[in-house]
Length: 574
Ligand code: SRM
Ligand code: SF4
Image (cartoon, rainbow, N blue to C red; front, side, top):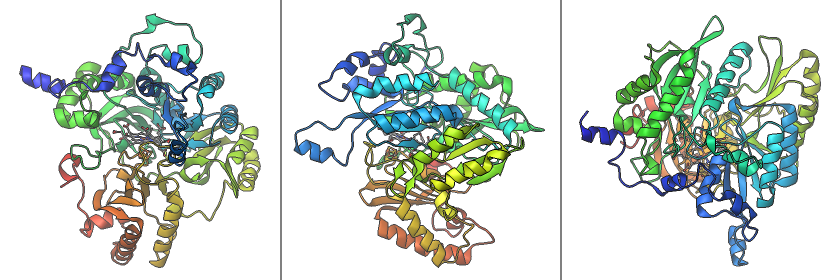
């Protein structure tokens, strides 16, 4: 490689470093002046550097956008508060932990809700400055932290949450937990700031993440085919479990997925991950560290919009990146072992695992657990937690599994779930397969409604399906994100709405059931009325002209409504 090529691979020719790089460098291993800022009672917020740094500790500064203008009129600063996102590899949480987070959300957060996320964890919204330390100490007392659930680090590691094949799930879950630990920041900053821990500067070394941490957020999953419930193609690094006779023997490794883009910037695009090949189990942690460190050294630190692994792969070439990972990990990827993904959703209702235990998946619309006037959902889960002897699993589809229920307790749990409206047989397949990000009022980046818009939008889609006599057993994977960042994973949906402005969205079509295809933009910046008119027309065509059980996302491509996105960099905007 010539010197110039080397510099290009290292990203040295991409321009001056972004300000986030300065913030990380000067942060003294993520400490900044957060502790001092916490004591400043004059403002409810954090200074600009700490505003970024608290993310590495799992928090975002927010304010309620519904009341922002009103407060400004009254010459008040926005009602600053933080959102916290916990670190829960594989989404596993015990009933005791649940009861503690339920209590904290009820007593100390502005909204009183627990929000299950698309990455298998929960968020508290609306925690005011005086309660932040208490929040971390409460979590710590029950064995939960929020380290590295945000910021330029490896985030919460996902793992297929379907516990039916319990033994395999258990093994996969243990790997998710190990990978999470292995890639975690080593600085003691979290313990010092939030848990009043002793200052231990000897630990100030980051052998994997590097002293300046990663160029951008980094996401990892462990998935058990044929279920792609974690949506691997939204993630930088994925370990696809390969089993022989029910025992995990290794992983196929997929690198470079990600869904975000920026309106009007065609250098940004959603992209599926590439298959690097198979590795035996014992190389898992080395490969994880090698992918992370290659991205650490080669990722774009000048332009944060082009900083994720997906862009590094497209800039340096997949083969060059893969070769470097092999070199750093000291392994050679073997030919990928065969596997297929067939579906993504959670199986709502009861299933019996191979170990004879029972698992109840509760559909939680938008993942929002709150006591609604007609549905006391949050109290219902707390009541289950009081008697449940197994654990809970948060899914990557914002649902909750009551896992590991012995046969003799099934009736009791079922009764509680029914009493609190956590079970509703009338919920359609369509609703179960629809999802939205948080968006308004808490998300500062929201351009259009998502969570608050989804329930009525789904009702309209249900009517359309009904009018065209689509059987109730069928549905179209429909997702809404309030802006092009893609938190609701609309860029892997059959119908994807991407927020553009209040009441206006870009309409994308053509994802598939397995989640292995990015949908293409069909129309830009259109109203909800227009979207429903278009969907009505297209569902009508689908219902009449589909072949066998052809899915909607496949039909719109075959019928030429949109082109297939095969290679994002080439096809997404073509
Ligand atoms: Fe996200 C930023 C919510 C999953 C891509 N995301 C945000 C913030 C924190 C807004 C901000 O930066 O201030 C949102 C907070 C809203 C709120 O009030 O809670 C937010 N993201 C969420 C959650 C809660 C959506 C949900 O409805 O469940 C999900 C939390 C996941 C978790 O537990 O860790 C969430 N975010 C995702 C996903 C989906 C996934 O990972 O499977 C994506 C797309 C996949 C990807 O990363 O490519 C996603 N979020 C983003 C981005 C764009 C990143 C990029 O590559 O440019 C941002 C903005 C950013 O980082 O600059 C963002
Ligand atoms: Fe906020 Fe946009 Fe993510 Fe929705 S997609 S939560 S609006 S950042």
